[in-house]
Length: 61
Image 1 (cartoon, rainbow, N blue to C red):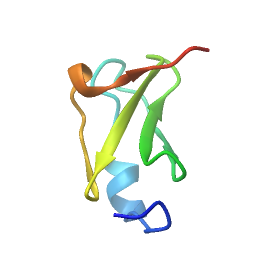
Image 2: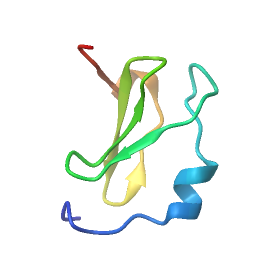
Image 3: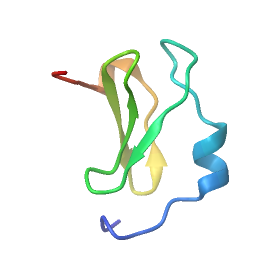
Image 4: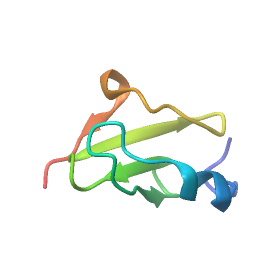
C-alpha cells in the first residue's frame, strides 16, 4: 500500500490505543496510528492497523 492510499476514516475513528484506551492520530506519511498519551506509533501494514504493543514504535517526544 502506498503512502497516498486512503484509509477508511470510520475504521480509524473506531480504533483506540490498547494501552491508554484513548484516541489515535493517523499519520498518512508514515502509515502509522499515533498515541501521544502512550508515546507509541502503531504501524499500518497492507491497509491493516497492527495494534500490538510489541509491534509499536516508541516515540521520542
